[in-house]
Image 1: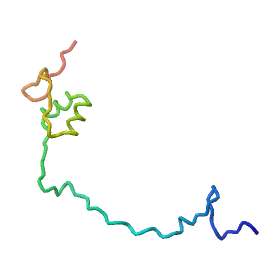
Image 2: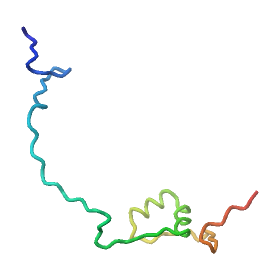
Image 3: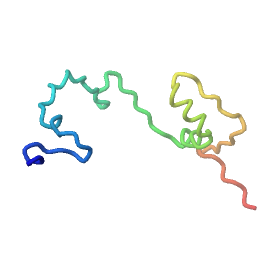
Image 4: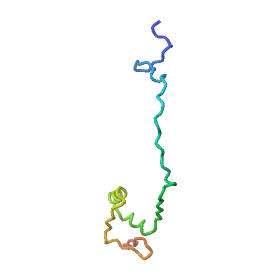
Length: 93
């Protein structure tokens, strides 16, 4: 007989010998840093002012600020802020 069940084969005709070979030993794993155990933790508490500022930024400005956190943000001076910290509600029509 030509076709015996001794070697399994896939649909494209190649034998599945690669699946039967032992895998090489894994290399050395890099240790992942736990963000909770950071050496110099910086705690950021969002306030109403920071939330209003974030909502006032465009998507591109927010992404640019996230990629370069050491650069100062250019805030538009026309943002009206209430003494409570949030943006003023829009006037009813």
